[in-house]
Length: 98
Image (cartoon, rainbow, N blue to C red):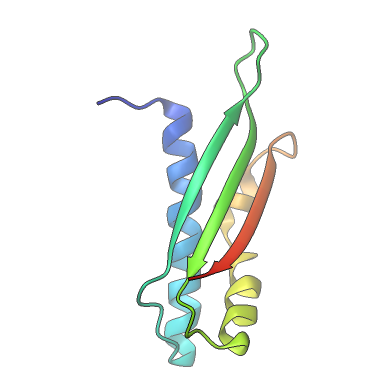
């Protein structure tokens, strides 16, 4: 029904992560079908109303090889949105096989 500018920031981060992983995976011929992520945004409780933490859960199909998973983890570190966010935001990424 509605969203805030900080919701868009979290969405930008998730989109960037998946886009970078997809670009890198395509260059190696890896299939990313079925990969998705969820992001939880945690705000500070003071009057400044800043993003305190972004909790990202990346879900990868169970059939994904360890080689591909390690490749994707490395590729995700090249996300420019992550590099441009303030050091004050704690970004936690967890990887899950489904």
